[in-house]
Length: 246
View 1 (cartoon, rainbow, N blue to C red):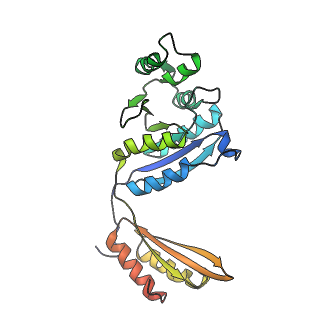
View 2 (view 1 turned 90 degrees about the vertical axis):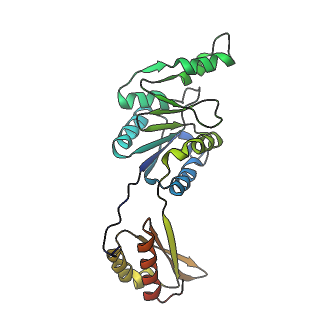
View 3 (view 1 turned 45 degrees about the vertical axis):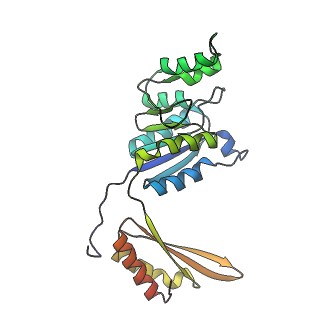
């Protein structure tokens, strides 16, 4: 492949929607977002947007609708429990203009736990937007719910991670390879060289990130691509041009 030849491959794009007033208020740190960033990268899915939004129907519906129209995959976390502020399911129904409907399969699960009749708060988890699909994989006692291209995950980190790992194989793609160059220089000194390399290898994402430690400036240059040959060529070019053996 010539260095100016585009590298083409089909890559799934994704958006993550972290739902919860407790995250926005700082009561609890977001664990699901960082986990999802790492895992999507590892399985070869390009995360194009991540948002943290409050527990309001309008905010959830607007964000879900926006992301569903623009990305192949949408992942939501939070708001699927039995309490008053768990409104993700009804908000997604609003986003797509669908009613909530009682799902017999989920109702049956609840009846096993409460044979005399599930309490009304529990019934919230059995009413899904019309057209929802149940995904049973792994050892989960409750399925993952999908509405169109929106995958609705719980917000509790260990539950979220268990459900994600059970279905992650569905989205496996070509992963990204990376390389780094460490320089004891300021960005302004290397900016033109990085610009030149980026134009020469457009299929390689080149970034520079300044650091200041012990009173001295340094830069970490990163190179990322699914094109192994282009990545190696760009890395070799920059390492040589910037005078480093990295």
